[in-house]
Image (cartoon, rainbow, N blue to C red):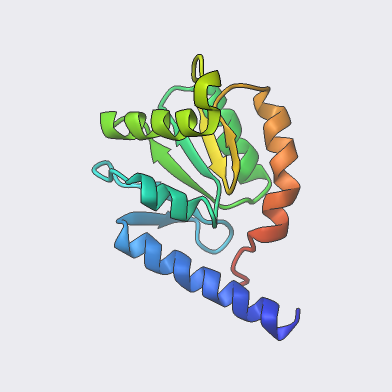
Length: 150
């Protein structure tokens, strides 16, 4: 790995640590994979979600949702770091709707959980979930690098 790539990875990692503590996130499974789950009181703003989606996929998921579990299992199985936003809070559901509506524009007729955003890609149920996950996997893997234990 060249020095530029190492420095970029370190900068992204430091940015991630900074965001995680500023936003009140809890880190889980740090040595293998980073899964960021907001605490039960965390209500992200649209600006925070827009910043996070540039680094990691953001998954708006609901407890008991089979499609949400499928998406999170996919990320876990492929060791892809992601941000999980719990839809248990009404504010988070409203935020999820705004994210999907912004991406879909007037085409939005309904939303299926989970809503997943990463950079400029947004999934709100308009296509098959597995097709979407397989499509973004190589993009995420080429950009999101996990910390390496020494």
